[in-house]
Image (cartoon, rainbow over all chains, first blue to last red; front, top):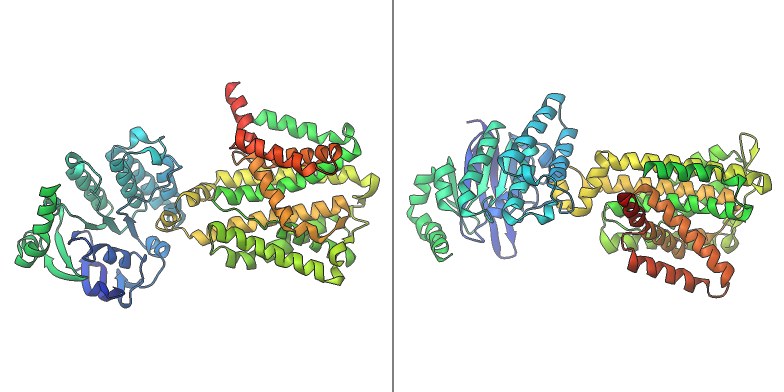
Length: 251
Length: 306
């Protein structure tokens, strides 16, 4: 297996609460991996640990075999891990186009000439495929919630990552647009040969698009496998899928 | 807009032939202070405000003063070495200050400037609270002080002001300018796109310090005297006022803010020597209330209307 990203014995506690409890996992390059779990299960903590926002108490994070444990987010990003956030992190006083220009400008700084051309192509493609081209001169702060989410993801894609980390990419996106968004993101990520790691609460989206699913509970991975295998596992159905379906039904 | 600014520079370039000497002296000081305001504009574009930038104004002036005492009287050398001394200090202090943001950055800058002020007040060798005079400075043999030196000093200050304004304008138009704007909005995102925020803040801080140091040297040469009040907190406050007065919209705004504040101060002092601060304060309050984006917004509106 060509491993893009892996962790070994990753632990992180928040007082008495275990945010990550001895997580050892390896992700194959080019795959699409979904993280599922209830709120507080440790999904975002895991993303924060692999992207450098949090430092682990114990354990290591390896990117293509290179130890990136404890590195600063900017260094991890430069090595090829880009992310979007649960609450979109944009430059509100800049236009949509300028937001993407910032992403491209930073990525370009560490790129070869050939890669720089590719960055411009990805930027134009993301703008078009996410339907943001018509809003390119609009200030980011004036965008509706769904478009903010898409711009946040587009900025991560423009960084030309080898690992794309998305925290709830479809939250705030309308139900009709959800599948289209995920499909577009995955297609663009595959075009970049990037592995995609995403947190998702919509089990239909998970079942349709994820090559592999990790189910989190109390900081541990309680199931790991294909979407059908994990979503049908009794423990997952009892602890996660049931509550997610309940929540969807309730909503 | 560019033609208007070019015309303004042309009018200023011939000022020695139409301005009375006292006005030329004020104009030299205003241009030098405009450079400090320009540095603050750069910091503010990145979301940071320094309440202690007079530190570097004072360091530049005292570096020039010490060089003059050591026998260095060539203007170009004073400008170069005075600015370099400021940059050296900014690299050291900036490595520490660039860790902080918001009110912490502002107050830490203020504290550092007051430490320097306290040092100047106490050290007899630096003239203590009286400061000391600088004389005999020349530019390639041309005197820069006294009656004959006023015009060369003014023209050199104007030239350096224009050059620094062009340089900062280009900087703001470069990738660093874009990243500085991004920095003000969202530091977390800047880091998560792969750019070191501290590195960017440090770069802006050093440039702003260099501009203040250069202005300090020019002020020292123009006035012919340096004193600890150059590093005092009220001087820092004056620089912040200048940049607020001018606005952040254009590099020229910093010089407009400095020019207008210096003119208001001079007129207020002549009209009401005992209560001139009241007039200055009222003028500033009016500007903040009626022109929250500074005087530059007025010019921009006129430009758009035309």
